[in-house]
Length: 397
Ligand SMILES: Nc1ncnc2c1ncn2[C@@H]1O[C@H](COP(=O)(O)OP(=O)(O)OP(=O)(O)O)[C@@H](O)[C@H]1O
Ligand SMILES: [Mg+2]
Image (cartoon, rainbow, N blue to C red; front, side, top):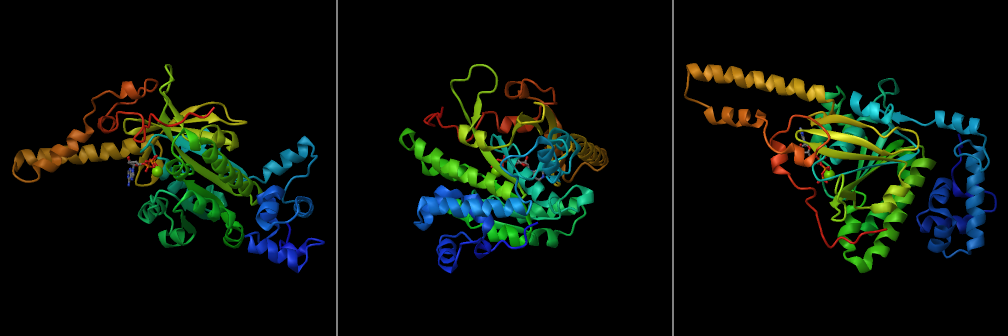
């Protein structure tokens, strides 16, 4: 490992250049790699040649230290380097099977799907799981959580931590939340994240949602290219940070309806090709009644596969867990009903409500033709494809 990441540890980088760089938010050698020569020249006003030289030196420094791979590497060296990639368990058997062990470091994992499908719950769960010990499938690392929709809930973290028998206070302490107020702020947070990642042993970066702010700020066809350009900058930055700092990155993304799709699923992720091309792994979450389906859509080495999972107090959970819980509640409800038969007065309404939630009926088939999970009430609440369905959404090619 490289011990010295200070800018002035690079040959030829003196105090003046160091100041110029740190004034522009570039604080160490890693930041130089993450931002790249074009951006460095842009933000410091340096000549492009000079910026290229400095970035090349930084790269060499990290190659010498074994942090990043050489330009020309044998496949066996890459294979060896890939052994250093960490995996974070999802805490469930089903999703771990899908991910072949868990979410990888040095990669960007995009999770997309309609509202309420569990993207934020998944992000919360992973923020807890990454803190587990290595023996238990974690990385003993902390989290940088970029919250763009104000949906980060410490209460959920507490429940998830408790369900996994972890100390909720410690778990909360290890999550650094950055609330992004607009897309420029969202980018800035990431640009300045280097020292925070380094000092806090951050092993997971979450951007939830990665795309929402860009979408709401750049509306209409005329602004599409600017939006995609800026979004592209953000996701590339995220992906480079994940690679350079050996941490995992999760970017969430909603889907919108595509009126031009006649067969199959009429939705597509909002970030379009920009996020898709930058992500190493893409997972599609879909509602299927109370259950959820996760599909590995794009991966360099996973088969395209689907698994069923569920959401609960413990975050994302195995469907069997959810069934166990349902059975318990059903039992309780039955007991209560029997009791009620003897003493027919109190709490009748509560029981009726609980029971009616259990009763399966309606139209899951319309929404999810491929899975035969028992349809249920939730589908009724959310029959359409996307809350944000917006016919004027410009379509990117
Ligand atoms: N404590 C809990 N116990 C069980 N399920 C929960 C709990 N909290 C939330 N959920 C489930 O999570 C769902 C919401 O999921 P989530 O917020 O992750 O959706 P999302 O994909 O992030 O949606 P959006 O696109 O709107 O951000 C709820 O509909 C509910 O089913
Ligand atoms: Mg969400």
